[in-house]
Length: 121
Image 1 (spheres, one colour):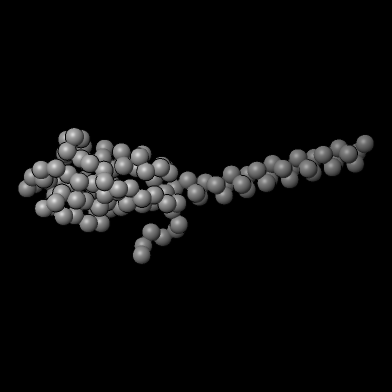
Image 2: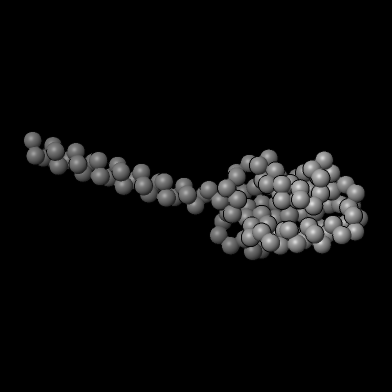
């Protein structure tokens, strides 16, 4: 009887321990990085500096490329909790809404991948 009880406790302990290890391992995959390409219609002269200021103040967004003439902006993000393209596109669009009206911002492309340590090239 004692052996069955001891064996049951051992199996229960191993089961709970392996569940915690799996949960901790999955937490590291819950951060994502990627790129969002947006096109902004009718870029005004002060807009590029304002966009750079807003992007520069956030810790997870970086301005990778801008072409003021065409209105194309490539914004890199990291440490995002969103795994799909739509949520990350909306995240960037929301950051730009204070500067540009939402109907002037078109999300052209979004790429998302799990964060793999250093985000440097």
